[in-house]
Length: 134
Image 1 (spheres, helix red, strand yellow):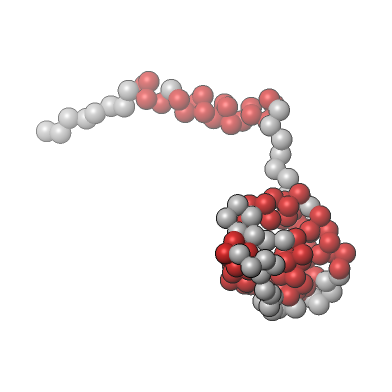
Image 2: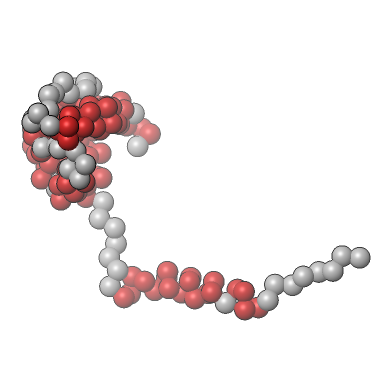
């Protein structure tokens, strides 16, 4: 015969505590997620898809703190400027990959251009062309 092994009642003790913590977390100063950046980029991609993108829409995306964080993150191992990011957004709006050169003659700047033209640009063009999936 097979013996049945029962789960100790203490094994489930952390579950209610975890659920209670998740449900009451907002009451203790946690804030709701900020979707401003994502919404602005999505609005820009929609307007690009409809050929109605404006310089103001691109400027709005570039002025948001999230874009600054993206550029800072890229600049950890690469060299990317906000102007280069602007060029990538403008080209993506037209359904193209930006044709750019490194701003400086250093390896980090070359890596930055490679990241913008091989990762960021194609992702934005894909988003522009696939709005219903976003």
